[in-house]
Image (tube, rainbow, N blue to C red):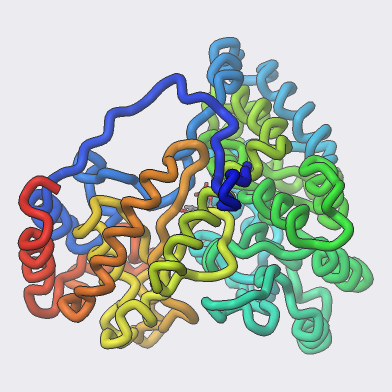
Length: 481
Ligand code: F0G
C-alpha cells in the first residue's frame, strides 16, 4: 500500500508484520568476482550463499502469510481424494469462478498439459507476448507463437499504462489468414512478464474475448500474476477505481474459457493449476494429469502447498496483498528514474527492469548486453538479477542467435521480502555502475544447451572486464562491501 507523508512524499508501506526472518550476507567484492566467474557469468548458476538480495525471480520466493503456514499444518496427505484439494477447489470456484480445477506441480507443467491437449502441428497461438517456457512447450508440440502486442508495447520508456494489451487488428488478421480451426486458443498473459511486467486493460481483454468467441476460438488467460494485473486495472483503468481486487479478478476470468497459473507468484506457493468451466476441456486435460503430474487431488504438488494455495488464492484478492510488491516496485523504479537510470516505465508488476541497450549502448546484441548487465549488477551489489534478452532466446534452426525484441536485466521484487532500504541500496550501486559502465564489455557462450539455454549456459567475458570492474569498485568502497 502507499501512504503520503506530511512532506507530500509517497512511500510504499508494509501492511504486514515480519515474524520470521532469514539471515542475509553481503559477500565482499572479491568473493563476488570469484562467484560470478564460477557461474560462467550466468546469474542462474550462482549459489545463494554468494547472493545478498535474491532478485532473480518472484517465483516461489515470496513470503507466505501466517495463515498459509498454519494451513500447511492441517494438510491431508492422501494420494487420492485428499481434503486439501477440496479446499483449493472451493477457493478456485469463489475467486476465479471456475468449476473445475486441475493442480500441477508448477506453471510450466500446466503449459505442458495444455500444449499436449490443444496444440497440434501447424497450429497457431496468438498471444500478447510469449513467456520462455510457454513458447518452448507450444513449439515442441508443433505450434507457432504469434505475439500480437499493441503499438508501443516494446518501448521501454513509456506512459502507456497497458502495454500488455493485444492489438485487435492483428488478431483479426491472424484469424482471417489461418482460419479459426488452426488457432488453438488466444493466450492473454497477466502482467506480461517479458516486456517488463506490464498489464493488460479489462477493456482490451473484453474485446479480445468477444472476437475470439465469435470465431469459436477459446480464450486462455495465464493468471500467474493475476492479482497485480487486477491491481493495475483498479489503479489505472477508468470505471474500476471502486471495484475490489476480487471483483476485478472475477470479471477478468469471465472472459476466459480456461485459465492456468504458476501459483509461485500471486498465490505465494510452490504449485500451479488449470481451471475451467468446460467439462470437455477438463476431461481432456485430466486424462494426462496422472501420467505427467499426479492424481487429480494433488497434481504433483505437496498437499501442504495445496492447502497454502487455497489460502493464498483468497489472500491475493486483498488490496494490501495485491499492492504489496507493485508499490515497492513503483518506488524502486521512481528512484531509478530519478537517478537517471534507464528503467522500464511505467513500473510493472514483478520487478524493476533496466533497458540494457540503453545502459550499455556500446555492447551489441550479439554480445548479450542484458547478460552483461545482469552479471555486472551482481558484481557491484550482490543483488542477483535475471537476464531477459537474447540469452533467454534460443538459436534458430540454422544456429543463428535470435535477437530479443528488448534486452532487459530484471530485478524481481518478491512479495513481502525486501524493504525500501534494500531498494535504495540497489539504486545506489546501479548509479555507481552507470558511472563506470565503460568498463563493462561483452560476453560469449562457452557452453550452450540447445533448449532454454539461459538456465545452464555458461559465458565468458570478452576481455577481463569482470576483474577490472571489481578493482574499480574496490578502489571506491574497499574490501568489505
Ligand atoms: N507464465 C508466466 C507468466 C510466468 O512468469 C512463469 C514463470 C510461468 C508461466 C511458468 O511458471 O515457473 O511455475 O513453471 N515465471 C518465472 C519467472 C520462472 O522467473 O518469471 P513456473
